[in-house]
Image (cartoon, rainbow, N blue to C red; front, side):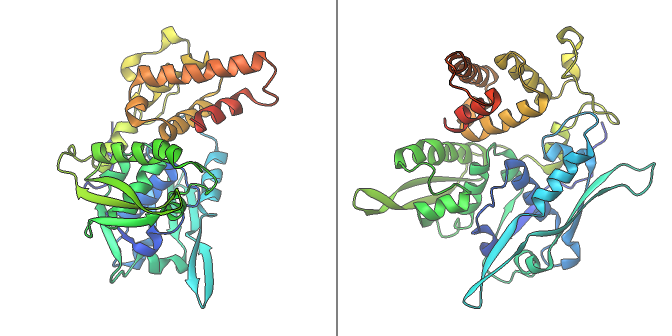
Length: 353
């Protein structure tokens, strides 16, 4: 397999202003892409605002390993990236603009491989370059190892305050920075179980910082603010370099990405399957093969964001969890309670714990 040309030990330099903005409902893959983009620019050189990915690397970043991906997929990704709106205070009001101004999917000539290129909007440049103060840094591998968007954003929200050793933030502001709607998890106990605890476990296991937290202020019996104590994680594992992340996710062949989805099980050689494809095929059995590959990819993304990381990373426990939810779909369907989509109903069961 050809090695990725991406360098090791990428460093992200992120302004506090950009970090404190709402995550714009970015998926985990989009957050990863933004992190990798920021690790590849030189924050002292605006001319590096244009970043190009070989298409094989882009597929690995976005967790897409499909043969003959249609061009509409890249159009969809481009439209999503070009609609990520940034809003900053300006003249007593605000100024809004897109984070990226241009996306290109192309190749130099008919013999060269495709590439995917993104370029920052001019109005976003002050948030990305020539940062004189009010910024923080971290190594990219921290972002790549995390399995859910809440985890990645929680890492950045707290990493910004690592030098202070603590951060006091309202529950409302924390939800906003994580990209969680204010109406979600109205009960603090649910917010703790669904977000705070899984993120705490993930950061402690997979990144260079750990945290504890406690209520700081209350409005009556309702918790208003939280105080996070942020410490250096001395027990973290060896970092995962960007090229290792890319190579780990690439298919086992150089030119053609083979899709085993529609093959008979007996014809599939497990030794040439990527870890990702092997898990996807395994989880297909939990839903009796009812859903398409694209739908299963979406379900796996949802699982990574909504169940504890120790469950998601355990194939059998994750399979059993998905199977239980699928059985609930069958029960509700037999009772005539699913009016529209069985797939949509399953997603709602996973997304609501």
